[in-house]
Length: 519
Image 1 (cartoon, rainbow, N blue to C red):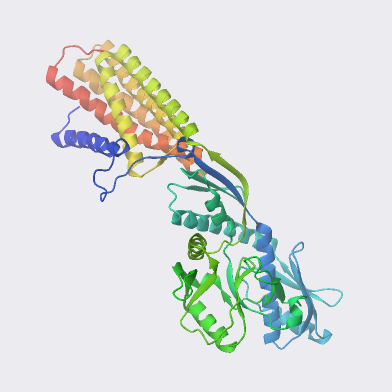
Image 2 (image 1 turned 120 degrees about the vertical axis):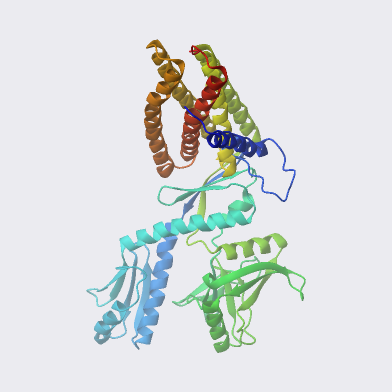
């Protein structure tokens, strides 16, 4: 029951620090240059937008098959082996072709089995009864790519949203192929939806110069439309990607000094710079298409080799379109398109009603708990109430320190924490009552009451802490907010109950030296 000056100062210092950390939630920052941490309101309290998006996993299979088909062509040509009628089938996840000569079948199989694989057992190579050769993608490899694509999509979505300046977005995974995006404070999500719905997969490919292919594209060539309507017929563009947009390191929106129009500048890394230099040196005089999401932005003629690794895209952009395109190129291309499955806009009036209801319930619960403790335990009940108030302050302080997002379930967690804190104080007071009834002196009764109640309090809070940590680890969305609030509340409860309550009782006893306890 002894409190040294250092222990006394430490307990009071923690309470004072908690009070200071709470102030930003009710005051404006008087020093804009100083960090001012406060709790942010979630979607259910502040209002905003909710988007449920689905990753198009079928396009992943299509892209992987196209890459496998390109790799097959390249491998056979390097080995001086021919092929006929190479095709892909997304339903069976296969690439098939006929050897140029039946005598080359074994050589084709040997060459294809040496092709590099991104993952182990990614595909198998087999000979068909009709003499053809088929490459089949492994279902396990496709599933692994799908999981990786969803994880990568979440990260890219987060980077794109952060670049728009949205405050406290909540981006979580739902199921195998869905992403939930919550945007507090954004009531018109059209621009966000456009940003997220654009794959932003940029490639640089040569245009087929054969005029007859402008109407009927042969294998290995695709007719791609221009990105701006009225820019002419589709262009025959080779499927082979000469330079990939993933090699971009930076992009920005600028005003072209010659035309006065908005443009997007880009910079390649060393790999992209080498590839861009090689293709422009070997194809001077040919058209080079800049393709974004299977639409040609522009197809300029290569006048001279470009070796610096820098370039500029002009395509009739306005300021917003140029800025958004640069943003998407910087954030990276989505591995697969995202489609909006569900969209909801929550008005701020609903958030205001929720805040009023939450504050009312929290205040009512707090008042009833205070009255209960005061009526049943007198002076020690009031000490428990002071500890309870400190508990609430410390919870808000910790949430403010980490700039947590408070939701309606989080407010419910705060109220539940206050009830759990009262349980601990009741255990202590009842234990002290029992010791007084046994005839112990006031100091001995207080000492025994705290000692015998402490193990029970620690055990019960430890099990509750473990349960809510598991809720936070395996839960999503509101469940995690609820679990986080209670987890913080359990820590503050142990501090206020076992240290602050005892401190108040000990200081009262040291000042008054009572002959009996007010229990």
